[in-house]
Image (cartoon, rainbow, N blue to C red; front, side, top):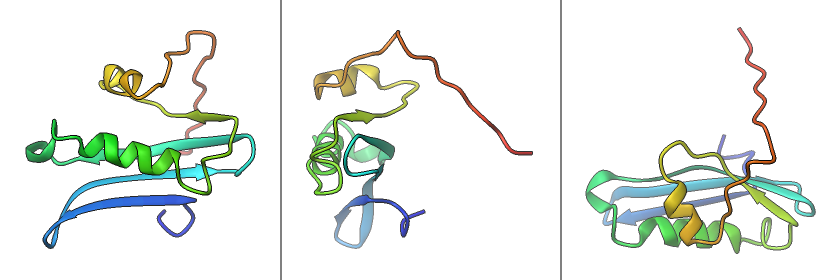
Length: 97
């Protein structure tokens, strides 16, 4: 997962991982943010914003036309960072097994 990601960001406090995010990208047209997480006891301190901003400004993502992400509970957080809810697209899923 990490090796094939175009961008990976991790936040550490001493030797403890407190936040993480990654992105895939074709470097021209599309990128997708994945797995943006911050430990519960470090939420609300700006760490999520730091991770997302680092990902969208990463050299593999910064010049793409569109950056996608999927979220189930944090839409408001991403809207504060400039993401816009899209009702014109449907999520399609192909599941193996």
